[in-house]
Every structure is written in C-alpha cells, then in structure tokens.
Image (cartoon, rainbow, N blue to C red; front, side):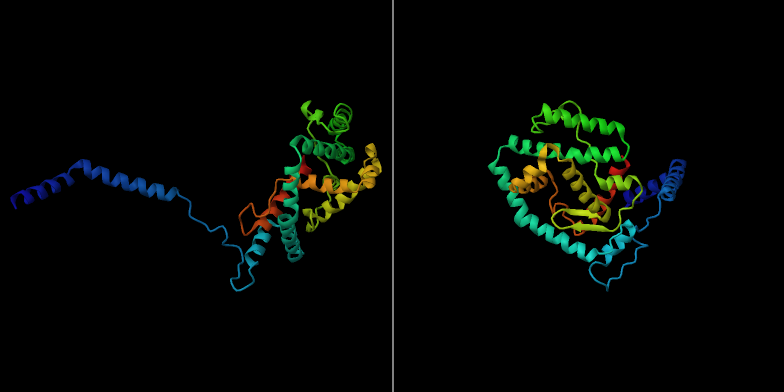
Length: 268
C-alpha cells in the first residue's frame, strides 16, 4: 500500500514539471495545424444525377454527360458492341489462333508489311491534303524504299532506316480542317468510330482504289481470298480483346479512349 501511494505521488509530481507542461500543448497545436491543412473530402460524383429507380444504365448515362461524348444512338451502339464481342470470341479470334498456328511468324510479318505498304497510299494522300510537307516526303520515301528494296513491301526496310509508318486518314483530314466528329458509332465488325471517321474510311478506300498502286485492287479482285487475308491481318495486328478491361463500364471506357485518341491524332 505504501509502495502504491509513493508511485502515484511520483507520477503527479512528474506531470506537474515544466517539461510535460510544455510538450503536451505543442503536440496538440501540431495536430490542430495538420488537420487544418488537410483538404476536406468531396464526393466526385456528388453533382451527378443518379436515379436508383431508373434503368441499369442510369449511372452510365450520368457518366456520359460528365465525359461529354455525343452518343445519341447509345442503345443501338451497345447492341452492335455486344455483337462484335461475340463475333470476336466465336469467330474472329479462333481464326486468328489458327492463322498463328498454321503460319510462321516471318510469313505473318510479310503479309502485314505488304498491306501496310499499300496503306501508305492514303497516308500520303491525306498528308498532302493537310499540307504536311515533311510527313509527305517521309511517306513517299517509305513507299519507294519498301516497294523496291523491300520487294513490293514484304520487308519494311524503311522502318529499319528510321522511317516508321505515320498514319493519316481522311477522318483526320476532316478533323484537321475543323469538321466535328459527329455522333459516336460502333461499326459492325470494325468497332468504335464516328460519323466523320466512318465517312473518312470510305474516302480512303476510294483513294486507294483510284491510285491502283501495284495494281493491288485488280489482283485482289481476281483473288477474293486476299480480302479474307486482309481482314485477318487487321485483327492479327490489333491487340484489343473484349472483356480485357474487366470492367462493367467497358463500353464507356472504349468510347472515351477512342474519342481522346482521335483528338490526339488530329492534333499531331
């Protein structure tokens, strides 16, 4: 009992010393100061109008307003998006896996190089239309080197010489001159696009057809299987996989990323 009483007395004496009397208020002031510097939490979705009793797409429509993407036929686009995903899963990707299994890599690379060489025709045309002189000269050099030294494009020697492909399409040309993208579209088999870019694809196809570079269209028309090879090569080079984002908002994310990508390409 005497030992307990002595211990309590010592503790009370220590608490009354100047050291403790100064430290305690200082730490309290630091805590108050830190709290005053911490910004107040603000819910980023506080201003979104979310109706919990509406359809399951209500939250996504709220996100759409936040992203400000013009998608007036969203329901139809979503159905096409799901169709493309199923087609990709059941048809396109099995064909690609078979293509990879049946052909060595150098063959697939050669096929990709040939079609890339032909694609430099609309790349060149659109570079000229946009008045990009240096890019036009680089693309012209690519065509000359790859068609001659690269054996009609089988080998991308221009890339090895420091001349990588610089894509330009008519959708970019229209955007360059201020044409807005218009409504967002999901094109069957082809994926995300816009009214402007879909129209641009048709012009690029016509441009390549009119140029008749290396008589490619005539050769392809005489060998219809080559159009199938062209479609396989497009998917083979595209690394996107439906569902890979592992998100219930994949449609919105793809739409947003496509829109921003096109803005970036047009600004280059």
